[in-house]
Image 1 (cartoon, helix red, strand yellow):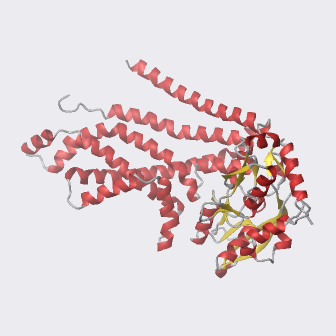
Image 2 (cartoon, helix red, strand yellow):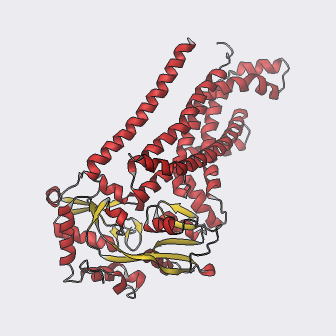
Image 3 (cartoon, rainbow over the protein chains, first blue to last red):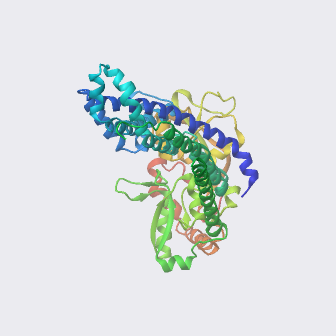
Length: 219
Length: 288
């Protein structure tokens, strides 16, 4: 193991980690937004839009991120839509993550018994108030484990970004191996940097899970 | 209660760390046992087994590619098939990418790399090259409306496409560190991105950029020869002298029948015409 090599190329990994995190965070934020809206549409059974959302969820969950990225990065320019590689990464992550997040939130929303909604409505609360004060807090608590699993899953999925020429951690390691043939050092740094990024996320996840554990109705 | 969960969590973190390190240690051990100390197959072992594994490109027309029938074709493949025939074994083609070529040899995934592999000093430290069978230099292709003929005074907002793990990448990093590189991990994706207008130019082996400009109207090779002229040769795992010697004997023996000229006629004429024949082909391992 050459520590000199590790020291010399550490900044390259740092840049890659920043890129991975940047695209990861923005992409996941959009994924949460898409997921939340999709879950609400499904929960309230909004006609027509519900169908579209269901189609989107099946399309997005049953195609690999790599294929989606190829479509966005190499396919879209053919019909005149030319996006920067980083934006493609964000769009791809939001497209894939949106459906996973939607399913996580839906599982939370559906775990709340209808009787709570009916009771609240009969007490004179508006539909918005029912969602805001009764259903949402409980649903979120139920969704957190699935939600955190999705966040970690999506962060790890960023490792396919190399196929659209984004210098993420995975591509940096592959590139260094190809350039200088230092396999052991490159892979060592790769594992370390993924751990540095993902361990705090897992820890944050379990913290969040405990904080949000409201007592649900009836248990 | 709190203290116990804390200890549990700490234990979990430590365990993850240990597993992470263990994984690295494993790759370390694997690299040293099969790579530099040599876990490769000698000629006799290959003959005994009846199959030789040869690493070739699957997306680099006309050197190594898979045709519409799923069959490997190209200049490198033509030679690979001859090696199989003369060794009396079946050839198992293993698709490789530029950045994997050395890895594949060091981990024993293939016996020979025949994937447009340019001989360089750095690579010679990692693998053993046999005699060369082709000449090569670097070239830069750009669009007809903005032909790039020099790399000096590069506009920093423009990027140059390279394929990760190629000599073009190494050359540009060393000699033109200010040119922003857009790196791709395969020939196919680099080609696609270049056609989509992602970058103003593409640097690669001149054989490849010339082939690209001939196959795709609208592109010109503004810089046909960049850097030193090099050779392309078969590579084997470091220390596999029996196989390297056998290939050398094969290449020298094939001179009598002008094998590589026939190879050029069969695989490259369709792309290059006969114009480049004498400058590209190396016969009998003798560079003129």
